[in-house]
Image 1 (cartoon, rainbow over the protein chains, first blue to last red):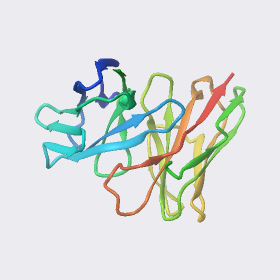
Image 2 (cartoon, each protein chain N blue to C red; image 1 turned 60 degrees about the horizontal axis):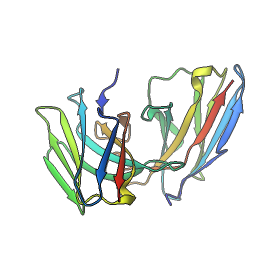
Image 3 (cartoon, chains in turn brown, purple; image 1 turned 180 degrees about the vertical axis):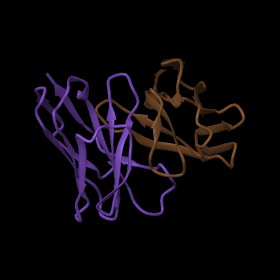
Image 4 (cartoon, chains in turn red, green; image 1 turned 45 degrees about the horizontal axis):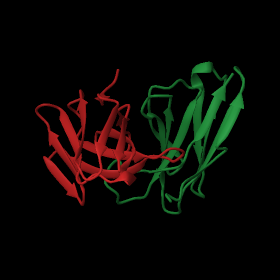
Length: 111
Length: 114
C-alpha cells in the first residue's frame, strides 16, 4: 500500500524557470514531511522538510508547501539550475526516522 | 559527503544464499536504519537500530536481520535469498538533535540475486 504518492515520474524544465513537484499522502497520522534529492550512484540527500504545524517552509531556492486538508505537498525550485537535475523523493513520517517514501520524480533542467 | 560508507557496493548472489551488508556511520550517529530500494521504487524502511537495539521494523520477514555495534557500524543480514531481494540497500544514520527524518544516507549496496 503506497502511502506516499508521486505522480508525473519525470519533469523537464528550462534553466531559470520554476520546477514544481507534487506529492500526495494517505496516512493522516503523518506529521513530518521531507524532500530528498538523489544523484546517480549516490545515496539520497536531505533537501528540506516541513512539520504539519506549518504550511510553508523556505530554504534558499527551495520552498515546500503543505496542504493538510488535501493531504498534499509540493516542492518549488526557483530558479532551476542544471545542477538540480536529479531524482526527487517525497517522504513522510510520524515524527520519527521511519520514513515512507514516494517513487520519486526525475527532474531534468535544460541549460 | 555524508560520512556514511557502505560495503560492498555491488554483489551477486544466488537464490537461497545468505548475504551480509555493512555500514559505517559517523561518530555520534547513534541511530541507524536500513532501506530497500527496488528498481523504479522509492526506498522502503526495513528496520532501525538505536544504541544497538532494534526499535522499529517495516514490513519485512524475519530473514532480514541486523546488528548495530558500539563503534557506529552496523550490518544487514538476509538469509535464504529470493529473486525479489534484488535491490539497492541503503543505510542511513542520524545524530541526536536533528529534526525527525533528517537522515544521512550511504551510497548503497546493490544486490543482485540470480
